[in-house]
Each structure stands twice: as structure tokens, then as C-alpha cells.
Image (tube, rainbow, N blue to C red; front, side):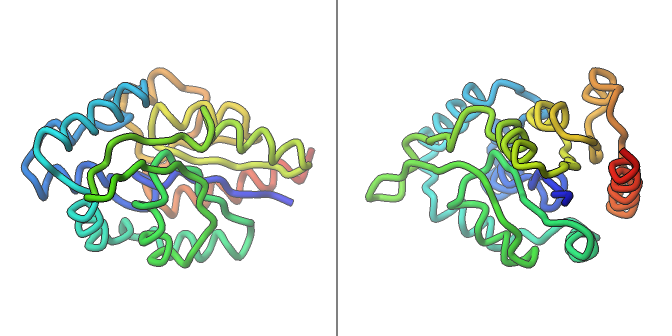
Length: 205
């Protein structure tokens, strides 16, 4: 049995924090793991910006409710589900990600949790576990699943490194340059074809 493990933002939906930046006009919120590979440093920066500008979770969730999947993403998930089990491995948070799952046909989501006080202020975050994308793939392989994985950024490369087959989706050029061992898909049709190709290679083994 093969499981497809997919990143969420940048692969299936637009970057949530960039959408918040566009809504609020705060350029510092445009930074993502494409820019800062240290996730803890990135999240502490984001939380400090939210505090500075008095942005609460309600505003962010209002932005998320207006986010639509990337063009072709829903059809891609539907086609992929006919061939594989699907798990979304994301460094987002359940408070952000669950509304988007409905728009993608409710695939399984593994991610993290925000710490929100009674006024709706985001005061901290809790990782489900460190390096959870990589660890999830490792554990699934220990259960004798084969894994085909795809992501778009630095925080996906650890996941790709332990999968049976890894594909980068529309990554920045610097990620392509640093990780030339991975195939690169530039649209969802190409990505689906890489999954089918990988399936054939796995079956041959």
C-alpha cells in the first residue's frame, strides 16, 4: 500500500500568512519557510508581529475562510485519492487548517496547535512533535507503507529525504539548487504524473 504525503500551503492552498499580510498590509507577515528555514524563529517572529499590531485569531480565521484551493488542487486530490491513501503533513495549525480541509474533500491532516487566550490573542504555539513531517513518514514506513511525498519548501525536504520518492512542487530556485536529487513539478498535472511514475517504480522493487 502506498500513501501520498502532501504539504498543504504552496501545494494545495495559497500561503496562509501571505494572505494575512495582504489583508493587513503588514509586509513582515509575508515571510514563510521559503525565507526562514528555522521554524521556531519564524513562528516567534510571527507571534510578535501579531502582538504588535493587535491581530487576533478571529481576523486570521476570517482571512482563511476566504482562501480557495490553488487552481487544479481539488481535482488533483480527487484523482490522487483514487490511487492512494492521502495524508496532509503541514506545519500549519488545526485552528487554521481544518476549514481548508473541507474545501479539499476532507483529507486527513497532521499539523500543530496554537495557544490562544480567552480574548483570542495568539500567545504561543505547540508542535505536535518536532520535525513532524519526517517523523510521520518514518513511522508510516515502519508500518510497511510505501510513501510518495511532495512539498514546496525547506521544511519539506526532511520529509522527502525519508520517503520512497520525493517531489518538489513549484519550489523557489534556491531550494531546487540545494536539493537537486528531487524531481520538480510545476503544476498539479505534472505532480500527479510523478506520483504515477513513482508508483510504478515502487511496484517493480
